[in-house]
Image 1 (cartoon, rainbow, N blue to C red):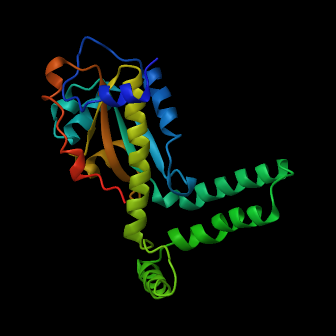
Image 2 (image 1 turned 120 degrees about the vertical axis):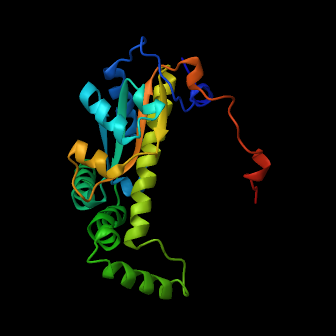
Length: 240
């Protein structure tokens, strides 16, 4: 059985895939199910996964990715999409789940229950609701003033929340790629793409955003461009 450390070492950004070595779409789908277990902000899961196996769609999206080798030779593609606009629907789903759990548990304290329910009925609307961008600036000013008195959450503008949902989607994408590595499948995350064209291909609403496109397949030897390079650990590690 492959360990997490082995999967991390195995994973490389592969730019060329073996056309004669197909991958199983159901196994890719199972890795996407594991991606759902990745940590995400407030458990809202504001993302969607588009698993591309159709030859026509593969060609279209490859073209939107500038026909770079990682896309052009991929046997399958996964497009990770952020859906900040679904915050209300996903918040409601969390709320219903929590209520069902509190009803089952006799040990849940009323204080814990009230806090959890208030989080999704009050905090989430305050955090995600936008009105022409004006509310975001108002929240920013109010929180900035409060921040002089006590610690406060400062990333509360619309642009900040966009960053939050993209981070959550990226965590899911990384979990997916490591899950693929565990079963010997290769991937390459691609940020080089025409996001508007991909949204049109997938018929996504204007509020959706492309987080990244991940190509999938079995590597050719020349598909890994040289040895892995990382700057010295001492330049990024600070123990306080």
